[in-house]
Image 1: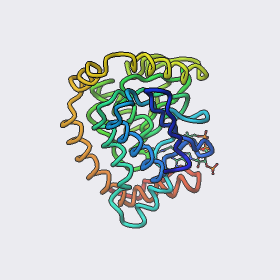
Image 2: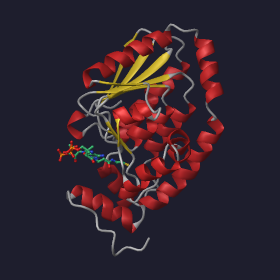
Image 3: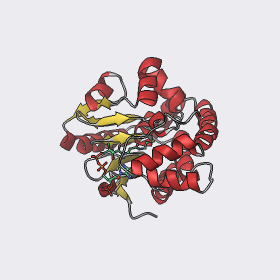
Length: 257
Ligand code: COA
């Protein structure tokens, strides 16, 4: 378990809440593990019909803890395996997932939404996938799923230029079901989860299965994982992580790959 993941039951709904608000809910290894274990347990627990991801504080999550990225790069690891195990569990999840996004959703905080079935965002939320700014590449099969959802040009600008979407834009582009005032996001997500839990579970599961190419998603995650691990070891990534720690812009001008 992690003190920064809160797992709550509300009848047939399992809530998994990111609870590290002082770090904008940046995800540590322990948090990934706790969230994955809760998500996996929900798949086999017959009394759980819906999973809801939410957060404490004003952010959804600022994505992977960049200090953990830096430690992985310095230690010569390929990539934090816990992050990928969490991502793969999302790809495999059969039960429906609802997300409540009150603010920042960065990196995996944004890409995990592509694996959620109902998404409620604050109008003012900021969704971004600045992988290239960190000298990394997209993960969570987002290199496949994001262009499918919003088109290549917009997806490339998000990945490569770090352009963000507001919650209102995410709604317009079909990435979210509703964009709401921040205080209404979690109640709306909870109401949707409750409504979903009242539907016939067999039909819900079969519908989700029909709508997703799980084998294709897992295959893309595997391909991304390998390249991501290589990028983590690059001089570019070391410069990006150091710049974040020093609160300065990175300087890639002297690096060639
Ligand atoms: N990893 C580790 N720490 C993080 C973090 C992350 N991904 N995101 C935020 N934090 C920490 C900050 O370092 C800061 O810690 P400190 O108070 O000890 O200095 C604290 O959380 C608050 O963040 P701050 O940057 O002051 O908040 P903000 O409101 O000005 O900006 C963000 C919020 C999300 C825009 C900004 O924190 C950010 O860009 N984070 C990095 C996001 C990112 O690149 N994630 C990886 C994607 S692959």
